[in-house]
Image 1 (cartoon, helix red, strand yellow):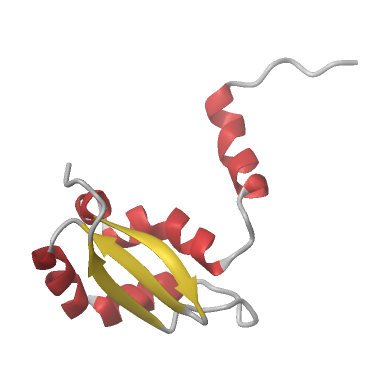
Image 2: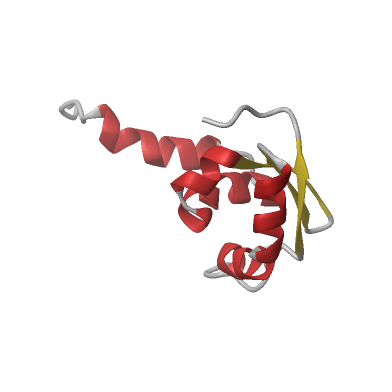
Amino acid sequence: MTRPPRPLAEVLPGLRRRLAPASLLADVQTRWPVVAGEEIARQAEPVSERAGVVTIRCASAVWAAELSMMGDQLVEALNSDRPPAAPAVSELRFGVGGREAT
């Protein structure tokens, strides 16, 4: 017996979660637009992670400076609802380059 087709929008979120790499960077990249907000996500993106330190590439020095001041709040938000044994973000570092502002 076959199941009836389901809408693609209903299936994609679960599929995306199952296929995403199980890494701290992947988790931060997935959560970034919600945690930082859509405008910030258009101007800055998580690009690397090493030992809990996540590097955020920003569209300009102004964005990097502004986000540096919000760093503690962003780390706290990124670590919220994280299981105790899961890796956590210890620090965010902000740099400039390689991304066009939209």
